[in-house]
Image (tube, rainbow, N blue to C red; front, side, top):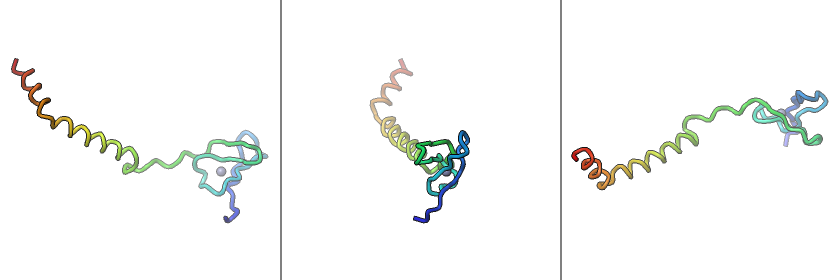
Length: 82
Ligand SMILES: [Zn+2]
């Protein structure tokens, strides 16, 4: 523990300063003594290889398994040929 704190002043009360360990102004500020939490800079965007990419990959895998079912293909053929 370095003891280095963020120190950002609360916009609603200048007497309150963020006493979180330095956090690059990201996420939220907090003063533990006063029990105050306030907004800081938004967290950096998640890279495209994050959670979303994994989720869409999972969806694609599930779909390709279903569309490969022979029964579905036959139903489609019957529908379009009366
Ligand atoms: Zn802070």
